Amino acid sequence: MGEVVFAACLSHAPGMTGFAASAQEQQLARLRLGLASLRDALECARPQAIVGVSSEHFTNFFLSNLPAFAVGTASGYPCPADDALADLLAIECHEQAGHAALGRDLLAYLLSSGFDPAVVAGSFGLDENFAVPLHLLAPGSPPPLVPVIVNAVEAPYPSPRRCWDLGVALGAWLRGQTVVDRVAVIATGGLSHSVGVARAGDIDEAFDRHVLARFADGRAHELADITQEDLDDAGNGANELRAWLTVAAAVDGVPFVTLAYEPVPEWSTGIALTQALLARRSL
Amino acid sequence: MGDGMRGEGVDDVFELQRLLWDLRHDASTRTAFGRSPEEVVDRYAVATRARAALLGTDVAALIGLGANPLLVLAAARAIGVSRDRYYEQLRSGARAERADA
Image (cartoon, rainbow over all chains, first blue to last red; front, side, top):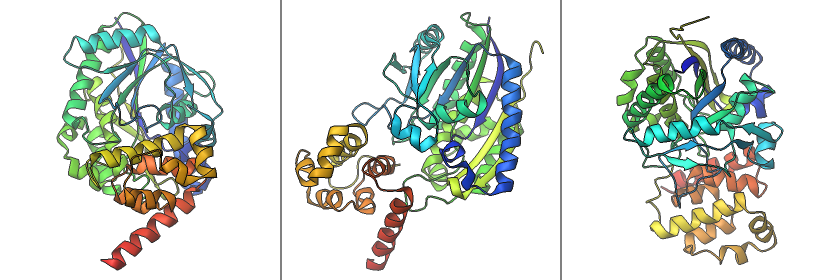
């Protein structure tokens, strides 16, 4: 039986790697401390694979076929997807290992559990969704990844409640799967931000702190009923809260510690780093 | 993000976004657009306003027509519009729109 040895929800703004130095010095210092804590915790957890939940920013999918949910079953992913993204993110192109067997197991489980995710068996490049967090959390040697994509870029979106329910199924599978013993699960995206629109740079700190407080109190489930209007008010990028809800549900809505929160206008994003307080079976 | 159902009609917005996608992902489309934007835009079934917005790299108009801002931003970046220039153009377009209202 598998064990979730690490769970976190964090932002993936391109500025975190691509133009980090543009942020104010003290904000950057606090974020670096939070990242160091997350990085140490992930290393100590010694996961054999990472299941990552995030959105996809038209790097692979297009409106001709845009799945609500997708699961990666490839053995590797170009990371970042191409030279243009490599330049934007200041991350050298490389291959991120995928855990194909684990991905296939998750896909089969979800298909037998009332979900119908698209399969991503290859030809799928990573953008900031995973390139940024993996670069920061596990530089050099991240464990193999199983990407789970949630549509947060184009309406109609899967509802926040549906994303929560997906997380419940994900959690049941994580605990029951027998492919690997130790798994980390991360959500990436958010918090409030606007991309490509005139209000880019606006950060809804009240929204962000509301979300973080619910996660800290172990009441993330209350956010499953958040309205699309509330998400839109926090910016088009706030739709990525869906990934956070999925991971919170996967770990039974346990409290998450906020390791850092900084509204960074230079990166146009409310940047948050959180880690779940898991009831572990071992140190 | 865009709702894909606005603007001049579903097909027009889809075609407009298909061109934006191709500019981001297809080097030959980018090269041809740099050489002759009109020739590239003519390959897509976009209507008059979308055509004008594309040829003028009017990002505010493209979003106003219903294109997803992520696609607009990515396409603009792909054809060499800097992040600062993109947002400057977007905000001046939005200001002009408010002034016209």
